[in-house]
View 1: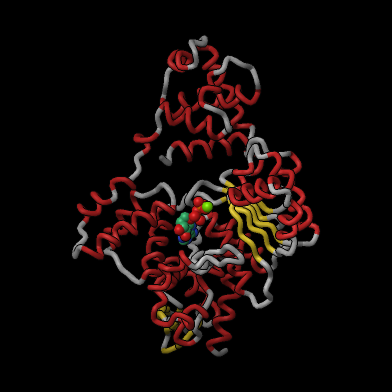
View 2 (view 1 turned 90 degrees about the vertical axis):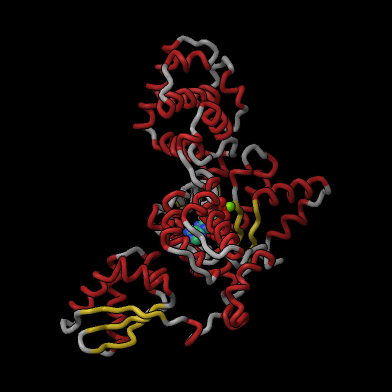
Length: 450
Ligand code: ADP
Ligand code: MG
């Protein structure tokens, strides 16, 4: 067995041990470059892969190697940048300026597709918090229209939804088969439709969407309550879907939790694959930071990275913001000691006690259910109000340890048994009803993320 055959056999076995998404992320562009004495050396494309493979998969790879050839007793990884043997199109285009260039990609939004080339699968970090969404996105990018249609990605802000759905678009439009991709934010979509209606141009608007092979619509929760837009979108959706065109959607919550969404549209949204992105853990936050540093071609001391990863937990956008702040400071000032870091990152560091309070809970619950805050206090038995009100009472008790009489006072001097009833009801339903559990989780996420 030569080195290449040996590695192929290891890869084939690795696939049984880890997820498809992780496999694609960590084992792409790896190979055995030498087998000397009892040691195998594997080349990897960058320091990040090296670190991940040697920390996470070293044992497993060695075991598989040893099982295949028992003379093998040791393993090593070396970095062999891709550009040396097999330049990526971008590296070829930009040469040494690649890292510098990355910063200007913001201005390079493709006029035809609306995609930002910065968002790729290559620079998207995968962990258990987004593994399913990533795997589904890759599958869709590989065979648009035929795997999961629509693909619906949901999760809180700054957790990578836009990055992931644009990565699908970028991967497809890089393909020489030249499919027509169009990325649209729901806000733009709504204003497009309103303009079309006003200027009596609906047919032209629809005609502009007809030739699209992959439609990516970001933040569809924004369609909530926009009846006319929903109606038009329903027709656009159907005509693309019938032609096996791919539709990719993102939202800050699952379809069944979007208020004022037409039933027929909701059932379309639920007709394909639904996957969520959640919060990365400490370890993954560290990996994300390292990836971003590498992208920019700069370094920061380990204790600084550890401080950021430990303390900036709100979402990935904040993590990036914290990093950027330090990098800007670092560029101008020579040294970055931990005390300075603490000072600089004050606004990013999150403590649950800072943010969960009465005002926040009322604000978040009302907003989540598309109500005005005062509606929560309306003396009504309307279902759309009763449930959010009970949830607000439940959270005041559960998260802030309010007494039942105190809750009752807040809600217009109601009898405190009403508050007890609300608490028990939500508690029980939470156990029996997955939809409610999911809603509570999303609400809590918002309460605790500033
Ligand atoms: P959302 O659309 O969910 O609000 P974004 O996709 O805009 O979030 O992500 C916010 C920032 O975090 C972006 O700069 C994005 O590149 C970065 N980011 C999010 N998820 C990841 C990830 N898994 N790996 C690397 N960067 C990420
Ligand atoms: Mg987004």
